[in-house]
Length: 93
Image (cartoon, rainbow, N blue to C red):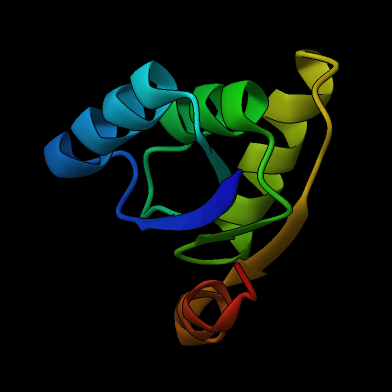
């Protein structure tokens, strides 16, 4: 199984990419990044259970944690801002 990182997972290209990955079944999403759409991002994180995620800022990170807690979903390592994008991009796949 190959690991993959998705940048912009809540955008149209990111959503379609996740559909393809789910359909293929031979890849594991290990890292994801999104901006501010935490309700959709939380659904994606709960479904794909990546090790690392990144979002725009600490307020978004807090919102993501709270939504995941309410869903009883695992909470991955969460990074923010450019540090988060760099962490996702540098994540060993």
